[in-house]
Amino acid sequence: MNKRFTRHFTTLLLGCVLVAGMAGAVQARDLPEFTQLAERNSPAVVNISTQQKSKVQRALPKGFSMPEVPEGSPFSDLFKHFFGEGMEDFPDRDSQSLGSGFVISSDGYILTNYHVVGDADAIQVHFSDRRTYDAKVIGSDKGSDIALIKIEAKDLPTVKLGKSSDLKVGEWVLAIGSPFGFDHTVTAGIVSAKGRSLPSENYVPFIQTDVAINPGNSGGPLINLDGEVVGINSQIYSRTGGFMGLSFAIPIELAVNVADQLRDSGRVARGYLGVLIQDVDRNLAESFGMAQPHGALVSRVMPDSPADKAGLKVGDVILEFNGKPLLNSSQLPPMVGTARVEEEATLLLLRGGKEKKVAITVGRLPDDEEEVSTLPAIAQPDDIAQLGLSVIDIEPQVRKELGLDETGGALVSKVSPGAAQEAGINRGDIVLMFDGVDVKNARHLRELIDQAGDKRTVAVLIHRGDSPLFLALRLKD
Image (cartoon, rainbow, N blue to C red; front, top):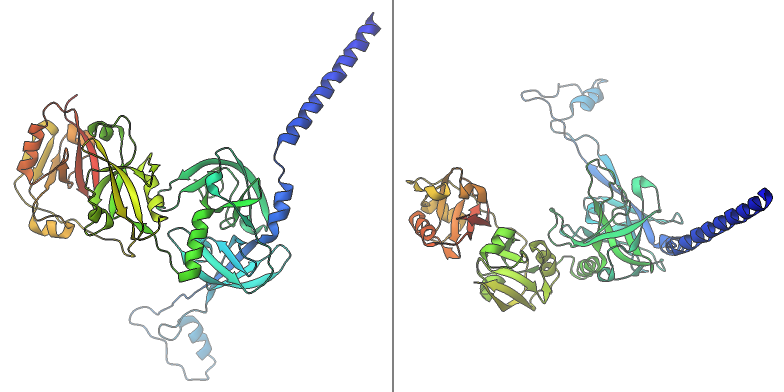
């Protein structure tokens, strides 16, 4: 009996092992196969090394000069070495950096990041088969962190370009680059998010991944399972300087668009509406009668801009650009920036609680940004006790400096605990609009507050520092 039990138990155990083995084999077959992707794309991925010459000036302390030593004296070279001759430079010092790139045409055009080659005096490109070429910059664009460089070569291996728009969150992707100088390192992960906006970037809707990216990976390709390049690895988020699971790639469509413009004209033309925008939070959405927060709230319209000519107004909420909905304001700059200059676009606005479509001709983004400053004003304050707020009229000189109308606005001179403080209004803010009405002066602001009646929350437009900002002011609980 014991022998029979032992035999049955052994058979059952072997069966479980076989089932487990088969399950493991099936699971292994379901995992993506990266070897062919790496073999196919590595020849077109390059390691980029740059050199930048920097001169360090040395000067003697004020009031001192190099001692007069007869020419040919054994001390002459010694004094020149340590003291220099007036403001003589030290010998050039080379600083080196490493990055990655990939070949997009067989005649030598290579895509990489601006920050890899932007300040370089000399660039060298290294292939996986040990070939090395000197490269020159065809053009670079700091705004998108894209650079196009070229080497003198023919019949080079190239990558296949895909569409980042077809990517799905959770999809496997592969990166090839040279982290810390280790050539042609392959790492893999998944797409974590799309259309990600970063604080320092206005015109790039980044692809977020968890692919391991480190210094030296910048400029290398992000590849999907079809072997197509869908992005350029550009940045990481890190509190330590090393990879922490958050990496960001520039969509390949944007990169190619920039590269084509750099190759054709040496510069990039970006779309421009001429508005300053901000997010719509829950309280602002309530004040505008919106069911939920979304869109881009217009806080300023630049004079003579495309937006001004199209009739956009401060307080408009842009809900769609060319039929594409805006969940938040950060989605608008990349859409406008990649739109064709001098072509017509359509905006869906929310104005006064009603939706409205507006046609606008996209302009070209100016090279220089407008700068404004704030000057103090002196006047008798008008206390608005129910809000914990004191405001004063604005002096003409301040209006001129800020580019404000000849009349209008009230300067916040004091904020006490209350509704204004809870809304985020600070001393020095200028109240330009209250509940959709332009504020003429301090007294007019008080009147508008009194007329608000039973409204719980109103939108208030203020000018702070060098930009306007909408705040939600809760009048009654």
